Image (tube, rainbow, N blue to C red; front, top):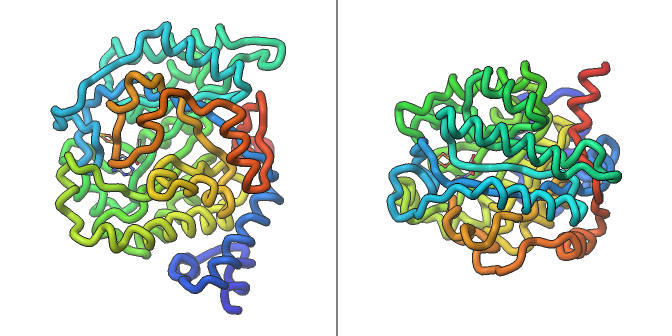
Length: 365
Ligand code: 5AD
Ligand code: FES
């Protein structure tokens, strides 16, 4: 099989990646999946690492054309959780055994917000210390583009991982799905600042953006490689009906299956090429198909982010239609998550940070 020649290469060209992303017959997809799984096993192990996700605020200054909580969507009731509620959730997260936490919100750059995040991180680190977690929970931030100084403040407060998606590495496509004030190059600069400050840096893209080609996605994978990223979180683009991009697609339901498969292939190909990074199997995959997150794990992902956002605000953090967990009254508890993951044959890490091996491998090589 020609695919075997490609997946075993040491370096990959754009054409190689386009080829891998284009395969469609079952046998070849199975081959790609198994190879990615093998690489994952070799470079990161088979354990799945958990990060409890707290979406602590939906207030946002950005206006991305695809996102349900964009500032121009006036149907959204805006909220910011109280510090105490975040800390309580963090304590619950630590007690459950998740080991790490992701604090996500809409983007804001005002001093009040920056201080709020800084204080929250500091308190989480302090209040989740135990014999099992002597340094408290691992903290990942996902609060958008900030200045280098702000990133340094967050880092000094105790956050050590940061997620900032590029959404697409094609600047023209980026400008089609964002208003003019959101600038591609500024995001690149932010990613570089995060790295300089010392964070484990994660990025990612949406798959199935209207107008996006296989070539774009192949370039995305090369972009991840070139940026030498430590973590990756990608997922399918899903329509939100109250956004301008709602009108961009007229055949989304017909393409849904293809976009889903493409998302899984992106995980596998990224694993094969980037090897020792952490790759998340995202909620958007689960939103498309109920077992989507588990499928992501089979294609080479090794991180899952159980939903810990307090239930009374969950319905106000709808980035896209059909986000799971909205109507549930309980959070993803450790046992539920564990059961689902173990059904795929994987084990779950308890009380572990599960840092990106890539970050340490490159630091000490
Ligand atoms: N479909 C899929 N992902 C989305 N995001 C925002 N809106 C959507 C959507 N409609 C993703 C973006 C962002 C992350 C927080 O959520 O990639 O970076
Ligand atoms: Fe940009 Fe929500 S407004 S992702």
